[in-house]
Image: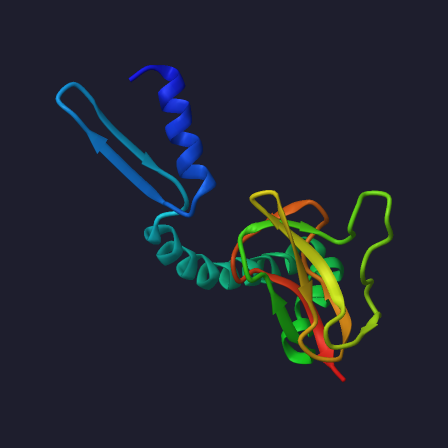
Length: 159
């Protein structure tokens, strides 16, 4: 098979919702796979579980060096509010573009359905909306930083 035929075959697979293609003849065997394997999804759940102890570790280690900075930010969040978590793996953005103001700030009151942030995954911008009326207590992620499935994005107080 020449490169032109191979490119045509790859284009056909990417233009459809086929996730795996296999072709074999006497001289060649071609396997094209795309998308994420189900094993990746199984790995995502333990990462969510491990994220909570990693967040708690700085709270334990921090009082020796910078208790005024770490303890107030980490301690009130679990007691005061609910966590809004990332529904997907991607990159966290606080605004629709670098020049635009952030969707929300600490202290903002948001209505149900209001956009809180964007999580970009595979060049798709996914708007994360508030599922209930709330007040933003803490923004847990920095702009343009990667997030995992289940990572807390905001700590909020239900209103």
